[in-house]
Image (tube, rainbow, N blue to C red):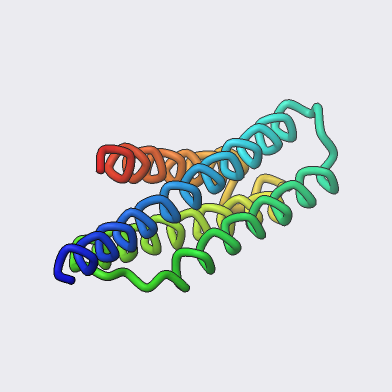
Length: 138
């Protein structure tokens, strides 16, 4: 009976890491796509409307990932820590998108600038990579 409980606990633990890993990968893709759109906009190769739509669509992906991680029921302290770290990183991603969207709206040379938006998304991308490395090593 104790062995069955241990197997169940291990399975639940793997589920948290797996779900976080999937959310991180999806979010990394969303941030990368947003950065491409922003850089193309800065280079004059993409319209503001297209860039805005891309940022909105990719932000929805971040929000979906955050919702998935938030709904997890971690079974161990380590899983709860992983969930908290993932939520913190996903919040950083959302903040990066907010900066990028504000930069796009203030595209007349105001603050923040488009490079500021790209920098915020780059920071989010780095945080996602670090979390992906950590979750992937479990």
